[in-house]
Length: 313
Image 1 (cartoon, rainbow, N blue to C red):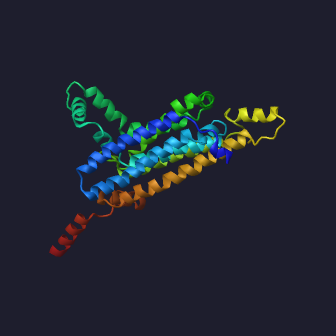
Image 2: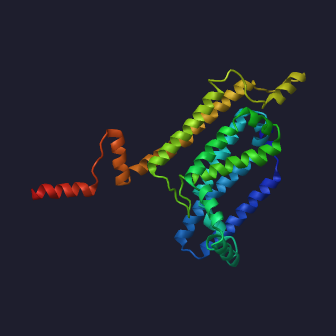
């Protein structure tokens, strides 16, 4: 039980998370006051997903998970997957953008929206926003963050400093995860612009990157690449007491397995949904037939036209 009851910290992050939930709740109440009961209940159910995402991200830092992630690589990988995949996906699925906007007083909200979207002297700001929320930027950012932080020359200094870990590494995981999941999960007012085939390709590519990282840390490595956990191993060697420790290389291999399994766990359901979308549209279905069968199937309109021609002849 000591592993669960000790080493809680960062109360300021819990306070910030509480304030963020309060802002969402204010906007949600303003929206629901002018909506029908059906829309209000639907919006409330979605917001529970956003609140779950906030709770997961907060607990990954304030709970003992943060403390042990600084000592064990496999715990760090659990935190990595939680902050980069689980929390952003839940938050995006909750469609929190419109409640956030309506949390601002109406006069201030209208003034800000006019200045950002209607002022002709603000094209640069709109261009930057278009780039940041574009699919290409989100995909590159997500995979780049994942790869760069796994480099030992980058990973070791940050993991030796809890402030850098909490203030730099984890926020980059969260932000890149939010941008990435916006390309796959509808989150009003944003809708994914990637075609179903493009989503399949992106998911396969990202899963391949995760697999390569996991294999590099396990099968292709001959020893531990990271300094994480060495402090606890040193304490165990210097003390006459018995400490529960883990060989650094074994620790690294377990972490690689977690990344590999969790990568497949999130990729395959999203991949199945993307493949299902390709069959809901005639154009996408024809493209899939052309790829899988070497020929394109006829659409409904083409079949009817052919039937009419045969009837005439």
